[in-house]
Amino acid sequence: MNIEKIIKFYFLLVMIVCSTVAVGSDRNTQTFMANVLGYNSVEHSVIEVDDRKIDFEISRNKDVLSVVPGATNVNMMKISFRTHDDQMLINGLKLKIFGVLSENIDKAILKSGEEILSEGNIENGYISFGNVGYKTDKNSEGLISIFLDVGENLKAGERIRLDLQDPKDIYMMVGGRNFDLKTSFPVKGKALSIVSLRGWIPGYTMPKNVVDRKK
Image (cartoon, rainbow, N blue to C red):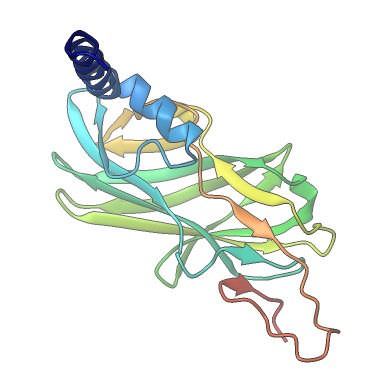
């Protein structure tokens, strides 16, 4: 390779790197890449709510990766909030069910720590939590968790995911006024896999990070 070709190759490489950095810094591109790669698009981000800001994060218990049909009290996902300007009230939450039929989810509970905030209404492919009444003070982190009882009819290989489809799916108030999250929707939750345990095999040991049925 002569010197002219080396110089051309070097400048081409520099242009590609610069273009990738510039495009990747765009919020919409970041969201697209995050969704394609399977990561949550709003994790560790600050979301503007009109002229205010709210930290908003969806995460999953790292110790819960899979469930078996019929498992109960499954820690499906966590949602954390922090307002920088005023007190915040979460009074309603609606999540779209993906990957399984809604009739194969027996029960859904929204909790703050050990306190039950609301029992979900499961209907038409959604889980809706009403009359939540969860408050956080300014600069105080709020954390709510969703727990599921899953049905016996779930099949190995299916994956459960709960998504926020629309800004109206979180009914929140900041400083006594209604506000909508301004971010890219849908906001995808973290998926859990359905597995079938082969307990009949001699010497079989249950995999780690699997929620089994209560004995």
